[in-house]
Amino acid sequence: MNSDFLNILEKYKNNTATNEEIKIVESEIEKNKAINEYLADTFDEHFLPLDNETDCYAEDDINDNIKEIENVKKTMNSKFRKIIVSSVAIVLAVLMLVFYVVSPLVGKMYYNPSLVSQGEHHKDLYFDMRVFTELSIPGYAYVNGMAGDLGFGKYDIYMVQKNLFTKVNENSIGHIIRGKRIGMYEDFFMRSFYFYNDFGSSRQMEADIEEFTDMTYKRTINDLKTTSKTAYASLFVSFENDISLESFELMRRDYLSYSQGGLDFKWVGIRIDNESQINDQRIGFNPNLNDGSTTSDRPDPEKYPYLSLIDYMDDSILMEKFGTYEGYLANGYEIHFKSMLKYLINSPEFTQMLFYSKSKTEDYQNALNYVEENGVNTYGALVYGTVEELLVFIENENINNVLIDDIKVSKYSR
Image (cartoon, rainbow, N blue to C red):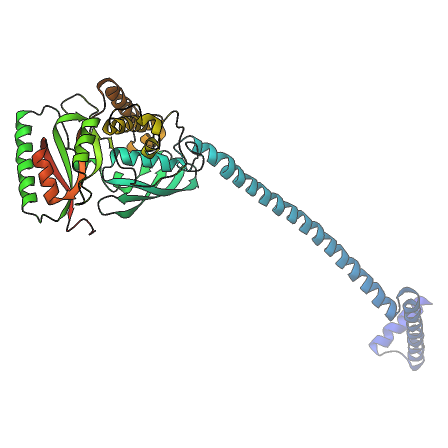
């Protein structure tokens, strides 16, 4: 049957089939269409979901996928947050370790001007600079200052020093890095001690030096004589021979004429070396009480008695031990001067910062040893006065050298 139908179908395709055969093929084609339609309808009904069911299934799948993506995002965000928080915490911990542990440890290894160890309130910079300025910077007094701690042994220094001749406060800014000053000596101080290096240079000068000094002396005197008598001058004067502090005070009081203004001795140079040439750094003290700043804060008074000279003037018990007021003052000057030396001897980090050398501690110790053995004597002084008064002083006293430090129109001009 099948083979017969296939033969008839082949004829149908070739258009050679009889009318009877054509009817048979077309009848079979119609049957096949009916069966295919039936099968298609049955498959849609039993095997494919309805339209609303398809929508539900698709929406559920999307929601599930979105939830999974959100869960993944939450998990990732949580991990990222933990990583970020941990990283920030580590960085902060390192920074705190560096600035609060490492930096202070480095700072302790070097001179720290912001430390409060000498007094109760003032920073060490105040006492260090105040003592050094009086001892080594004639004509100036330390007023105040600040130290900015930058960490790791670095400091910015701001200082105010009073020019005692012009009565003007002069400001200076310096920098310290790990125990060394940065810049020139003049960045810290308004005057270099090398300026007056020939002042009181020797006890016994060689002939050629003496001749040069004598020529300089005469030239300076001539300059003063050609200057207005009312002009006000600052002079370094060297005595022909060293004198005791009591003799200095007697001389000083002879020229304190308050009605005419008188001479104002602002600094007294002290002999600290027995050689023909003393140290390159002149040291001395200011015999006045009201120059610079004063404070009730003090370094240890037992270690450094009368480090502030004004404290000595308040000691009425000591005054009774001396027969003269000059002797009483000379004793105070001597104790005050030695206390300043002892203070700097015990401040090696400060002096090393200034001079890049530890030898200054030894220099101050040698100076102290010398005055302990030979007494505290002066070779000269820095003195202010009118030209007329100064010329009288020079002519009356045994002066062998004069250096003009500064000069102005009158005492009250700047």
